[in-house]
Structure formats: C-alpha cells, structure tokens
Length: 461
Ligand code: PLP
Image 1 (cartoon, protein in one colour):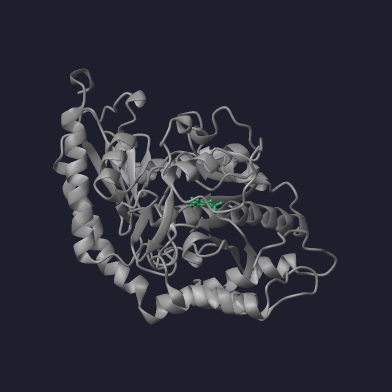
Image 2 (cartoon, protein in one colour):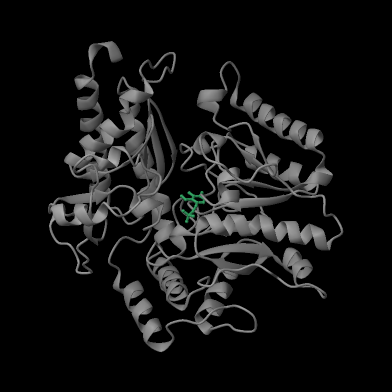
C-alpha cells in the first residue's frame, strides 16, 4: 500500500485518503458512493469552503458548536501562545495549571447559583457519563447505594459512549448495545406530535404524571437522577411545553432525585444567554454539562459543573475521586475556552444572539406556509423543520425517500450547509450571522424545499 502523510489537495485525492476514515453517525454503506462525502477545506466567519471551491454558509455551525464563527484570531492566538508556554500538563493527582484553573473559575462565575465546581472532560458524551458516575459515587458516600437509575426521555440525545447512548433516545441505538438496566425513558415532550386532542397545559400535566408514575414504579430510593436537554437537539429540536421544566425540577426535589441539565447545545449563547437553565427556563440544576460552544469548537473541551453540595460530599474524607481523562482541561483547550468566553463578553455575542436569533427563528417560521412543511420549531439559533406528506394528518413521507437529505442536498447546491435528520432539517448556525445572511438562508431554504416538493414523484404526495 502506498503510504503518504502529505495533505491530499484535490477532491479525488482527499476522498481516496478518506476511504480509510470511518465516519461518525453516518450510513457508511451510502458513503461508498463516489462523492457522497463533502470535504471542507477552509472556513472564515460564517462561511466554509469545500474541496471544489464552493463557498457555503455554515448553517450548522460545524456541529452546533462554532458559536463565534470561524477563524477568530483571538482564539487561535490564545491556543498557539498557550502551547508555546505549556503544551501539556494534566489535572490528575496533585497537578493543575493556571489555564484550567482560570477557566474553571470563569465557568463557576457564569453558571447559575451554587454551580461552582467544574470537572473537565473532552466531549459532551463523557461529561454526561461523568455526571452520572459522580452522582452514583455521591449517593454511595451518603449511604444510599441503591440510588443508581437514571430517568431520561424519548427524543433525547446525550452522546455515544456506552452510558450516554443508553440515555439517548432508544430510537438511535437499534442494532447496537448499550449500558443495560440503568436508564428509563420518559415520554417525549413534543406537543405538536404527541399532544393530539389536548391543550398544551393538559399535555404538560400528562408528562408530569408520566414522570411521577415512573418514579413511583421504580422507587425513588433506586433513582439517582433525571437528565434532560432544556431544548432537545439531535433528537429532533423539541421545545417542551410551557411550565414543563419547573415542574420536572419540582418532582426531582420532591423525590431526592438530582437534576442534570445537558446544556451541550443550549449554553454559550445559542438561546441568547451563557446558560439557558436559569435565564430561559427558570430552573436551578444540580449539575450542568457543557461542551461544543464552550470553546466554539476550536478545541475539544467539555465540563461537568456541579453544586458545592455535591462537591462537598465527593471530596469528603476517606475517598478517592477515581474519575477523569488524560486530556481533560488540556492547556490548549482551556485557553480556547477562556479566549472564546472573553470574545463573547467583549462582543456581547449571547445578548446579540437574543435579538438576531429571534429574527432567525421568525424567518424560518415563515416556511410553514409551504405544503410539505409540517412544523418549524426550536428557538433562536437552534431550529428544526419537519417535513410531512400531508399537513392535516401530519403523515410522514416514506423513510426511504430520505426527504431531509433531498432538501439538504438541494440547499448545499445553492450555497447552504444544513443537516438532515430523517424527516427533519436542522439549522444551528454561528451566532454571528448578519440579518442579510439570515434572509439569504431563508431564501435558499424556501427555494430548496419548494423545488424538492415539485420534483417529488406523484405517488409520494
Ligand atoms: N449532549 C447533547 C445535547 C449533544 O447535542 C451532544 C452532541 O451533539 C452530546 C451531548 C454529545 O457530545 P459529544 O459529541 O461532544 O460527545
């Protein structure tokens, strides 16, 4: 075999090299088709360039993460300066370093209430996995070793490790194994699809009753925690009904169940605030997990942010905190996090996203007048468009049609990257989009959806 470490330049060379790369969350068989993959070679601001020289608006912000936009020298220089000073040291045993310490202090300052203790990791999956491990240990130390179960929800996405995929919606692990016997899934909090013949308030009552029923069935003495994204992302961009979050938190408190908010997507400006739990949903979680926007994707970094109370228990005498990953709080990643947050503060990016995000949301909502658009949902810069074959009955297209992919391909031809997820198209752009760029995205989506609709075979509609 020809061995080469030089960077492939042409699309054909890149794709030839890429035959060795096993993609994530992809139809690997479909990717064997020539040119099924898109190689992105450069990025600046809200734009990316593919290997054929096409300039595309990055409608998915890398992967819900490039919140401040691409190519920000403030972050790149901070990473480079950090590497010149201290390339690597861990936060294991007795060691620490100033950059991780400063980022931990900054996150404690930004996180709501008494969420003052930060454990770093390298991905949202392991931040969530760690949150549960830490709580299991917490309850062990409190003499409640039976508290092990986790309540999650259908429609959730919490990651791909053995435990985080178990907390993710079961629909995403068909044919795969996962940690068994730990996680129980509550009803999906999606009013438009699941709340037929009831008011939104009645639907909220139903969800709360479902949770109470599960707690009573399993026994609260066996349940460690509830985990939930304030707005579900990769499970289909689902905003729970009004009043839901506070009532879920109240149930957790009533039954001594810890409340984990997975803010991997919702934190760092996407909904107009550094954290959404308190500012948007008026809840005070016991643990918040973050990743993605904390560095705007410039470096892999995640964190499990816990209350002083949890920390006090796990840091008490006669115990060892046997949890952690070598690269967690890596100096370069911590430097990226600090520089990213400094930039967000200096340019008031979350506040501005509160305004432009609403314009983005409203622009996308106008697409609901198209025949095959069933629901446009989400909030600010976290949006999903669900396609239907029949609007009145909300009937979906045949899965084999791959409607989301058809629209995404069309949009990409017209200069926009969007993410297909079955019947849904997801948009999660950088928060720095201008109003002009927002209008352009709206136009491309309208054209793409309409063209795909008009090109559908007759028997599909
Ligand atoms: N939690 C949420 C809400 C996510 O959206 C994701 C990733 O998309 C994860 C966790 C997992 O994060 P990672 O891919 O960094 O492991």
